[in-house]
Length: 389
View: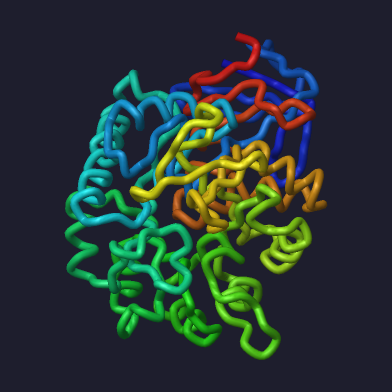
């Protein structure tokens, strides 16, 4: 198959080009108009598929539910917002629930790995294990009764249940004695992200020195910035080689904070995440839960613990987050597009096959309308969503 557009995102710029796809891969990039094409997208923008590293659920399903049917429905339909790869993300709960959750995700990953044709939607890249190794003061909506101290043995029990598919973990390093779990995860190829943490600036620097390479939903779930005690927020903004997640729904962080974040992280270390809950793309006005706790979704799309002002997550679609960054926060297209394509791929160590439109890479592509609505999404060379159908 050959597709083309006058605006294809290649090497950090939009350029006229043709993309040849064979057997799930991009096999060549051709001069625009040089070959007969199967689909001409004319002036629509073609971007690499979006990668969401922090997403708890959608369509009424939560990762902690641990049911195959719900997870399959999620990955089949999430390409409607341009997402072609993701990390289903747990939330702190008791061990029996977490074991069930990670076992379920691992089983579906293994079906995808076996090239099961029924699982050709968004690719599950692994599991984001958010908690239970978090801080009580900055736990946010995470249930307090299930929070635990970082522990290598306990983590390995979860990893064994997950058959090694925990690829990203959020933890609070100030409770990680001698940074033992941080160093263990780094050695085992698990990305360590600092979050839901009361860590000081100095503790954050030491955590980075011991293997932490990312920070979870910057500005949220962490000690706020002060000019004499910069805290974890100060570390997120000033450590140049550490990635930072950002929830760009305009609610979790003010537009000015989004701009400050991108000015600090540059082109290469900002990561757009949804932190979405099961309520995303769900029934309006329905009752939902997070970690066994009742949540409600306001008219602003923000989820809060019922009866409180505690933020519990978002219903953000990644294509909408991209629109907010570029059109409302004034972030450059280069920075904003990298944040949902190349940078998450680099953070996870899969930038040799995802995050770019380049020969040899997976044919994960999203075709965007000028209003950022998704026209078409390709997951490994297969059209999984088309707005015109």
